[in-house]
Image 1 (cartoon, rainbow, N blue to C red):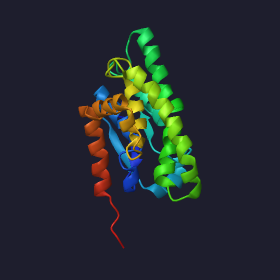
Image 2 (cartoon, rainbow, N blue to C red):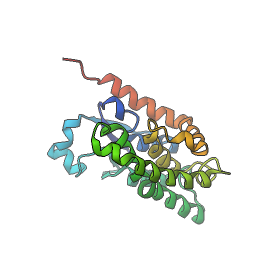
Image 3 (cartoon, rainbow, N blue to C red):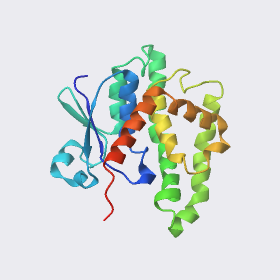
Image 4 (cartoon, rainbow, N blue to C red):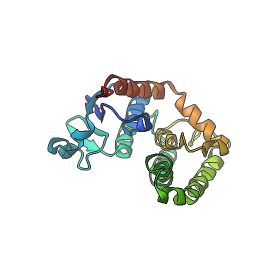
Length: 219
């Protein structure tokens, strides 16, 4: 993988810091031992024609390597994992299971988690959010109960760390202010293990340092 470049926001509001999805790509690259560069964009740059040619939805991350430009964090993590047995096992059965859990994180766990995040954080003052919260918590709880069963005798989803954990942990981080995780101590302990990994700390600290360096000056 030649000269990887990851896009991220130069700054994000405090409630979103540590949650922007370029974090999962940086983490995967760090776990794989692959050096990369970061191309920071301003939030308003999302609408530019030049950036939309790279990421048609105007989100982050976008990714470039070896002359190819890609988007979508899950797809990028999958591509990075293909280059590293540390993230995607060589054994066919373990490899397939890892991919299944990667997409379970994105397609089954993330939607209700982000729904609850919207209820608790981005839309908490809206009347609909207060009415929506009980059912949102219930759905998230159903997902976390399944994860707790999966992790009951495992440190990570596959037993050892893989790209599935990169995606699952970065999804679970959206619950950090929800008060839900403590009700599932096995899942909470799993997230703590993931966040304690040196590659994660490096990726997170890098992202937070960029936000601090680019914090808007009050008018």
